[in-house]
Length: 490
Image (tube, rainbow, N blue to C red; front, side, top):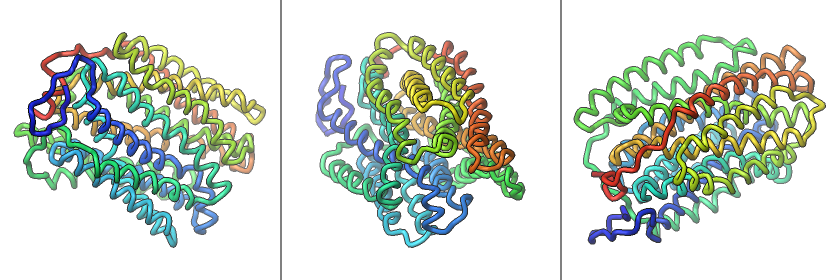
């Protein structure tokens, strides 16, 4: 049944059928989310260019990505409440306006401070897009088709990060770092115009005051954790540990107070992030599995491009092309994997997916300066396939285990888990990588980079191996007709 409220009586459709108007909403959101996440992953390869062009240190340049992740971690926890408080159109236009404004600022950035500010504005919009997309899908799509549509969502979540390095590598080698933003801006503006013109509101809004204290505690809690994690790498270069320890302490205290505040507020349905979603065992298990997968995945994909460029001596374009086959595989497999989920459930996907992902990470623990590019390409492609088999059933089963009124909170938690675990994975693996590389003579020594890669990816491989156990525990929730999408928002 369609969940778009037009003021008239709803039209009942066959189970699994998705009205054309609802699919139009989903496609607009998919396009916008793809552009936002693609942009999020393009800056990693640009760091060497930024250091040279803006005359900044490597530590400062890293903030182009760290500040983006930090902003995402602060904003995403608030989206669960915001998606219930404001309409679909309002949230969509706010997200694309922020993202486009940040992109425009980045194009004309006169120095590093302006570029950093632009990335923060961009991130504020990006943080809204994925929770908005996933909540809308759960509200619009019947249970029998959720896997198929979530397969397309997984394409956005997986394909965009994989294509980012390929696109940015080409643009950096030929046109410079500003070209990345020049390419992204028109697509974002077109998506915003289409949404403004044709996007229909989904579900119903609620009238409730926004708890300012929860927002402040969320910012200190999640922001402190991500900032502290991002500073771990500095320990290998003798950086002062006080800011790191202080940030983590603030993060832990802030998070504890935030959680306590939500428990109090959720008794009257006023929580910024309703924690009753964790009363679902299936949701909690899926989040634990996603935390571990993201921990292993985001850290590893940060290290592998460094290995390709500094150990195998490839340029940015070549390094980007190495991940392209895996990106294409994820794109092609997403909807197909979703259909398997709809008909067969989670284990038939999660078990082989986790085994394949873990196995490929173990392959990366054996690389050296004489490793064939083809070995890296095949391992990277199969790693992508394993992750595609894992992510779609995970977040589909997680959200399907919740009552419709909790979809927005579940989507916010999924985004928060990915940001925090991704930051932790990158921090831990980059620290291990940097320590080994410096001990071996620095990034100018290919063998040292290879040794650092082996050490860092071993951490990811161990974590990924644990997920094989979790793959057997997560199941597809039973489809319950009285929780069909038409009831969303009630």
